[in-house]
Amino acid sequence: QSALTQPASVSGSPGQSITISCTGTSSDVGRYNLVSWYQQHPGKVPKVMTYEVSKRPSGVSNRFSASKSGNTASLTISGLQAEDEADYYCCSYAGGTIVFGGGTKLTVL
Amino acid sequence: EVQLVQSGAEVKKPGESLRISCKGSGYSFTSYWITWVRQMPGKRLEWMGTIDPRDSYTNYSPSFQGHVTISADKSISSAYLQWSSLKASDTAMYYCARHSGPLVTLPLDYWGQGTLVTVPS
Image (cartoon, rainbow over all chains, first blue to last red):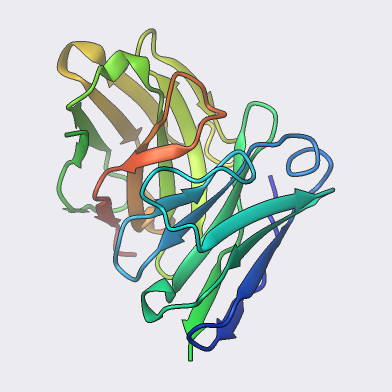
């Protein structure tokens, strides 16, 4: 079961917007609208930021938005803030199993 | 308040057995599936498997099938991750996490604090 493909790192300045991509296959990301994104600060527990492609749990800032096209999902963070600096993981249902992405380190310059 | 509280850090020798636990509170334990996630030092999250606490139906990642056992005891609202023979490569942080309902397709909305397992080579 291969990990979903994410860029190793992205960066942006405060106030800017960034997008993190997550590429899977027609067996996972492309087949199901069941992609979620998790934020993990260093030494902390992961936190769900979006689920079912574009839904946001209550309490998550609307600066976080997500979408999907074909086999690629994306997480966009607008109005970057210092507190957004963290690792981000995409996650997809894959027909009875779950697969995570390789993770992307977001640096706020 | 929903909480998943995991057992403490462990240091074990290669070949030893181990069981770590995850106790749920503040919600109906049998109404939400539990998943175990591995994170090796400095590495990504990896799905290990998921259990339905109602009947202990378990689904394993092919990468972990046969290497670990996931179980649950609904009478005490606890899930477990077990090894019969640890290896140095099992050194990692292990998280339990709750799906937001009784389906593996639902997101992981609450996480335990993690259990660090160290197996020196």
